[in-house]
Length: 241
Ligand SMILES: [Zn+2]
Image (cartoon, rainbow, N blue to C red):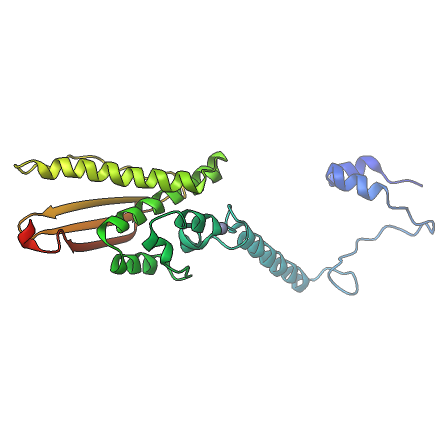
């Protein structure tokens, strides 16, 4: 007596059919029976089916949770704070940044609180670097997920610093012009799926001797995730201006 292989292949996958065909068949020649594994008596009940569905749902939830692990360190679940701040890969980059940024302790608070804290302790220069590194860390994370490319922490920090310098240089040229210049109109484009975009801008009030900076972080739908504004003294003493 052997398994009906063509029937096995019809109702099971190739792998399953191979496994089942290796199970020895009972020599007692008792008739085939349909057995529902989830009840003691082997008979199907709606209640036991619901129970199975519940278990499957939990398994599915667990899988979703597992797949939300940080793609870089694969140790913790990936929150915004984790990806941009507390992940060892992010800390590698922060460790190479300015001394003030290095000094900030790793905390697991919501990212908006971290940004708020930075605004209260950092000067304009370090805040620009902070925003730029955040931007580069997101870019690196997405490049890794979608293209399998991973930049070294040194590259993240040097690119971020270069962007800030370029921005400042462009801003300096604009401020040094005597007549006010109309801001150039550029259209904003959303970042790719699951990416965030940080834009920042600065304005200088020469009369009041103040500089204002603003940062806006938007998600791939263009929805604003966080905005921050800060005003600083351009020079310690207005009379020096
Ligand atoms: Zn991580």
